Length: 135
Image (cartoon, rainbow, N blue to C red):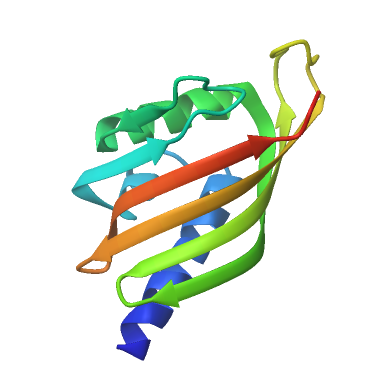
């Protein structure tokens, strides 16, 4: 079981690195099952939260690529247990356009708690609790 836990943890690390590099499309989809579900709980940018299937996950990543000139995920802590991985990360994004009173080039910061569930070596569920710093 430890090999599967280590593999899942490494997959999450790679996934966050790919997101940070701005990769989208098939490369991003390769981390997920075809029936994957991602839940973003309500936060300052998305007050109603959102549940996304794989097609929506990819579409939102493409939108994000246009919104940001860069982004980075710094993993603060991580835990792998069975088919689940939990990650606490600090996110930093630099805006490519004005958003919510912030101008182009401004930096946004957030603290994320992300919970992943795996099956057959891919993500089947992801839950995000995103806490954005004030701006």
